[in-house]
Image 1: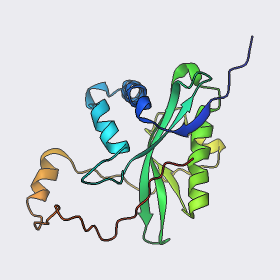
Image 2 (image 1 turned 60 degrees about the vertical axis):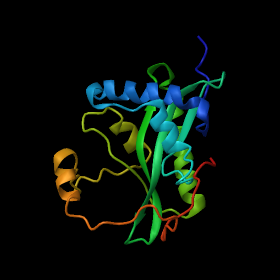
Image 3 (image 1 turned 60 degrees about the horizontal axis):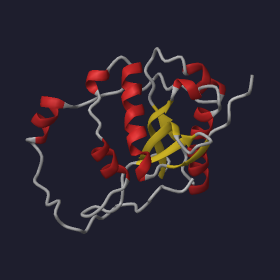
Length: 189
């Protein structure tokens, strides 16, 4: 029996979008919530490869590819900011490796790539959330990740989000002047 080929990690390209969208839907199925996943190729393309009026993307992605340059895993992430540390960090929105590619090191390599970006850019944290029954907890512990059990997640969505938005002060979002914006393409590995 031959050993599995170690994948290569690279920034996501436009041609990877259909495979990444398919894997996002596979992840939703795995997490028992396929009816909650509505991501389309158009949405992901727009988020990763932003164009005018906001040419700086807010979402970044890397893919693990096999020897034929076919995506077998992905990491989608964005920048966060720690007011206490005074620096950016990376928030990993989703990490997924297709079942056939598990055990090849793809997940570790995707995380190592993001850790490398953090270290090179002076970011202090690489953070993510995980569903509590995910067996990947053991893997995360093995690489030194700490469970942040003292923090309680909150989410505002749907009607509650719209109700609160009704109390906002109007802001002109048409202006091209975006003070405080951190231009960061985030696309180098």
